[in-house]
Amino acid sequence: MPDASMPFSTNLSSEKRSGYEFLSKELLASGEGPWRIYGTPSNANIYLPGIMVSHGRLDSDTQSDDTGIPLAKQSVTEFVALKKQINALMEHLRERKRELEETFWSEEPSSDEDQSDEELANPAMDDLTQCPPSDLIAEILNPSAAKDVSRLRELILIAEDTDFSPQESALLAPWLLNFALQQRDSNDPEDTPVVWSAIRTGASMLKPEAADQLRPLLEPGHPIETSLVALKMLGRIFEAQPPTDVDQHLTLAADVRGIATLLLNRYAITISQSATMAQLAIHALAATASSEAIPVAETTRELKVAWFTQGTTRELRDLREAWQSRSTPVADGPRELLDAVMRTLTEN
Image 1 (cartoon, rainbow, N blue to C red):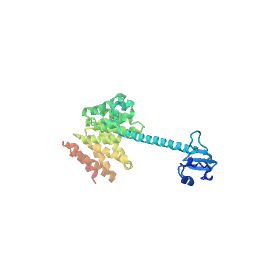
Image 2 (image 1 turned 90 degrees about the horizontal axis):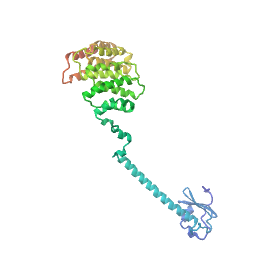
Image 3 (image 1 turned 135 degrees about the vertical axis):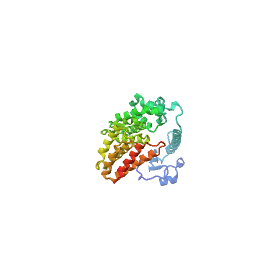
Image 4 (image 1 turned 45 degrees about the vertical axis):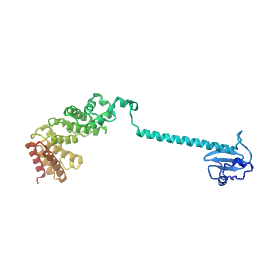
């Protein structure tokens, strides 16, 4: 851009000033407005914002090639016309953009042409939560399901919130528990919630006589810890379906007592997860009506850790209330054993 400090010319030597009447004298004199003239009468430059329109002598009668219009006036006129065209085009583009945005947010796919090939090939892909239970089971049990790991994970998570018939549950429960056994050695963090979900769903479908299927999941020492979830679900099974007699599940009870024995010490229960597992073990022993619950309760009391004993007692109280709320009374043996465990915990 020319040096703005150069003298600004307003006294043009040409007498044919009518050719430049379109330039406001006031604006020219002040150097303001959409145009400016820099230089001397013999070598002047007219500038619009960022664009040089014309340059040359303004103190002569010089005109453009053959239009009969002074060069400066012609150039500015052409620029103004071009600017109007650009503004009109920009306005058209802005309007088109608004129309496209409105269309994008308001329209939904209404035909097969609007859907991807993948969606057409698999209609259930959009919303698996709407998949009927029978179709969900068919997808999970399909041998090729493991090829799409992400989809299989999603199917398992959805299954936890799906109501299945007893026949469907009998098919799905063993598969889910076996999946948890196989995947608990995974180091992929995305598998952890899926494994836990598979245990919760599979265990909730088990009848008490099939509760031994949870025994392998009580084992520690795997990248994905499964014993805590398995213990919790073991207690839930017998809370919902109380045993009919005492000591009906001796092998299972022995495994659970082993966990409780390892964790019931002052060092272990200072860790929240260990304390939780110990409480769940006591709860599971009482819920299965195992006589092993009595010596475990004595060990708990001898620790003399008030907060732990109170928390365990609260868990057993909830179990008793759940049994009492049933329309069918709980058998005397399991109910009396539960009361004995609670008394043992609180004895001085």
